[in-house]
Image 1 (tube, helix red, strand yellow):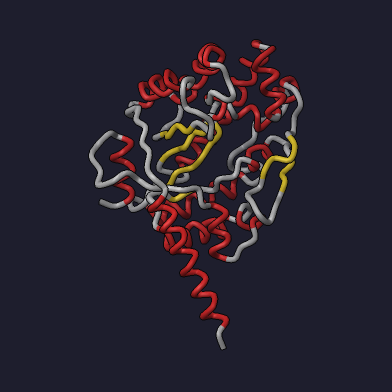
Image 2: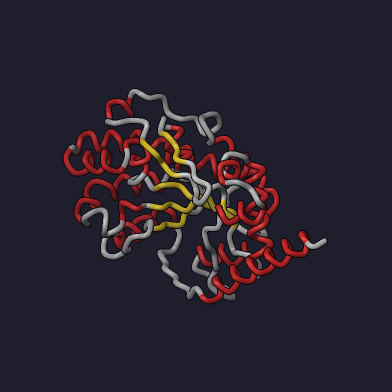
Length: 287
């Protein structure tokens, strides 16, 4: 069973030889190829080379399309904070209120900022790994996406205190969520990893999520033309997303299933890859 079969069987609730193993190793690809992070996240060739290097060194069950939410914020007019030690982050949002957002033209996945670079890298990775290793692209969830536009503080203030503006913002950013997800799928992504941080217990009370966000999440998920993995964004899954997962599973036709796996095997692979890279570097430097 290859990685593609293993992951797709897992998504469909079918038997597998083991649980799929994956880690977010985007910036690590730059380390393996000796590429600075600004180039890695701004150049399709650099990202593709980095993911090739990760796959050769560690052999994960997934290949990752460019994982860079700052590119989405940038497409909405935001500023990017670049670093030589970590992936780019959002320095400041491009817009401060819902009215300004609604007056802005919708970003075009094929033309705006670095979005075309991400699509180009996705196409090349899809061509290389088709039906051998699945290629997934991460997208901020429909409830979290407005924070890429207004900033987290601006979005939470709107969500908590202005229900009409909340609905307007969700509808507007929801168009981009669908367009961007489907553009990635059309470029060759096997599926979408939806990181819905607003669904975590640390961010949103269950009742607020159920009343103001869950209907929108359900509607947007039904318009994405491919498999989706739901990720809680780092917070506690319980108790907020239980109903969301069940509802989204019904909309996508996929099973609602949670798996966990120990990190010992993953850490061993990473240490082995690091050791091999050090040995190769030493050999190359020897006279």
